[in-house]
Image (cartoon, rainbow, N blue to C red; front, side):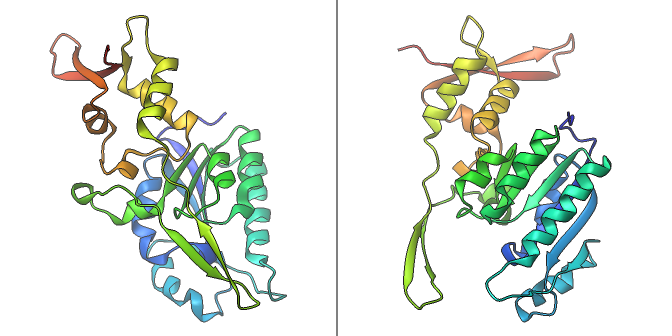
Length: 258
């Protein structure tokens, strides 16, 4: 089982057709929260003009471009190439986890297969990423929050997208709203709280992610989980000194009575 800590070796595999080149630096900084990116690859047909923005950032970020020609119109050969390479890397035993960068549901089964093998999966995609792929990851980060500076963070606002069909008609794809924060927090507290109702912030954060892989305090406009919990009127918090010096503290959270 992957240790899921900062020492993990990670394979970052980017579906360039469904990811933004402008967020590469922010993406890699986010990846560094979970470990070291020992493999960095981006997949696409680099002969097409729609990937031109990627060419300026690949070498600067030491990302290896993997060429995959489109053999047939309407078929995504890029997805297949990424999946095949991911399975090769999985069986090599050289990494502890994967970072899958895409908003495409085609990688849902890949994510579940990697987790079945005991490795961590961190997903990155836009808010319109289908829920099955989000749920298949240990942790899923919406890339919209990577565009924001911590002191300028705003809650991600769901929108409605209209995407054209090949026949010229249009279909409406509605992005589901963010889960209700109060319900999520109280459900997580029920699991991790001690007999007196108190739970450490760390245990609460871990349980929130277990229950909802896309949970991130930045989705609700606050950069740190502790600050988000302090703002909730239905919670009370306390800081408990750690060690004899008392220089460090642990934040505890519980539901208010009444």
